[in-house]
Length: 378
Image (tube, rainbow, N blue to C red; front, side, top):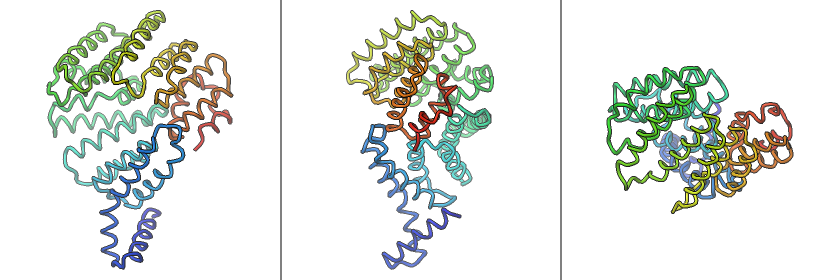
């Protein structure tokens, strides 16, 4: 009801300004809304959407959302795609699920339906990080997506269906890792190889390696890494080569972490850091905070702080959350942790910072701490 009233108000404002009749003003508003939202989004992104001045520009997202909501229950394809980006910046996963549900209620081209199904499952999986019911919904949505793609689209797109680590995490949280691996193994072992699915094939192998690590199948972990190297060698001009090599370094650290071999982690971290420093052009955002995050998982808080300190200017807002968690693990310094969370909030939406905060074990006894919550507030 509210969105209908808002839209009618905007139509009346246009009628007053232009002299158009209601039907003409209504049609013009529907046609122009995606471009108006796109302009607001472009202005927000130009201003630096993950920089320390993000908060000064969040009103642009609020205005874009007001326009999106005014469109009602049958959003156009153009509007859905731009709204998808706005809601990602807002980190409003529930609103994204509602958006895709509205879109999927319409008759859509097959590829559009697959796109919406994929992003709906992904949004559910993100919500599932803190809610097992959302995990169940995400798993079911991904099962349905796989069936849809297998029946309606090319098998070259199956790596795209399964590649995402966040969705895989939903299966893992429900103790369905072995089922996920069983569904994925035919895709990793007998993929339909085309250049267009190289990135998804590579990321699927990366995710499968981690999932095999969860169940302790080290031989399969190494098999996935060997396949990653083969994909990496397919084309020396591959535009994603730097990203792909970065994934291999993360796997080396992940293997050492799962083996609880702290010395091997440190060796892998030094090699990773040397590789980062040699990159031209440099990687943006810097992965140094990712190294710190892995030492945070290993509860080596001093080393985690060392790498997070090196990365606070590197462009990854999550580094501030990981840094704060390492501080809590090392000294439980609430003042310092709140300062770091405040820096994260300057660069990220409140909901995203809060979700990351709630997912770090070092904050488990401080989830209701007023000082920490105030640092992340909208």
